[in-house]
Amino acid sequence: MNKLIAGILLLFLLPNAALSAELWGPTTAGMTIKDVMRVVDDAYRIDEEEGGRLATSAVEAVRRDDVELAGETFTQRFYFLNGQLTQVTMKLDNTRGFDSMLGFVDSLTEEMRDRYGQEVDSEMIKTGAMRQAKVGWIDGNRKIRIFLMSMGPDDSLLNVNYQGYFGD
Image 1: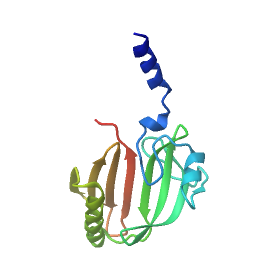
Image 2 (image 1 turned 90 degrees about the vertical axis):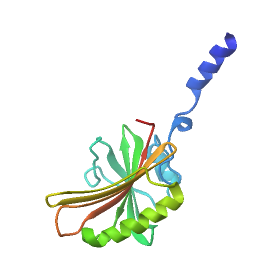
Image 3 (image 1 turned 120 degrees about the vertical axis):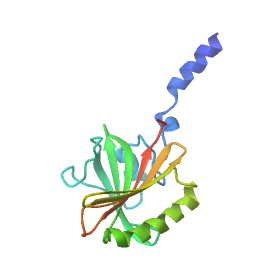
Image 4 (image 1 turned 90 degrees about the horizontal axis):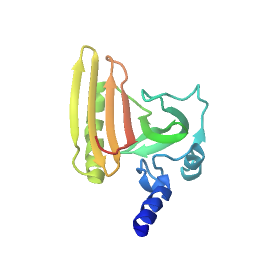
């Protein structure tokens, strides 16, 4: 009985990192701003007013420029909720119209398949002027999603999001 109680107590003493999910590269869900700044080369702090905010209320506090993925340049954005990292978003710097971006989404999807296996979902949505393409993977304790959206004929938005995932 004492061994059982000692085992349960040991579980409570495990660091949060042991239960967290890898997000992107050296980062894991739950890291502090200081931790991210220490492990991500060329990362820099941004003011709260300058950064973005997610629907979850997570706030962008750290950024990294000129990250290469699939032959394109992205800006990496690190989002924190209650001081802990919850999402890493890679935003494409050189966006183009939705139709011309679909070819890049296809090639990026192929590259991600090589890394994470077959996607778990994929969809195209068109509602009025809004168009979206989404492709997603579950890789252990993280969810990865390519998200392309346009609200008309102008430039579109393309993000690759890395989030902690602990099941539905």
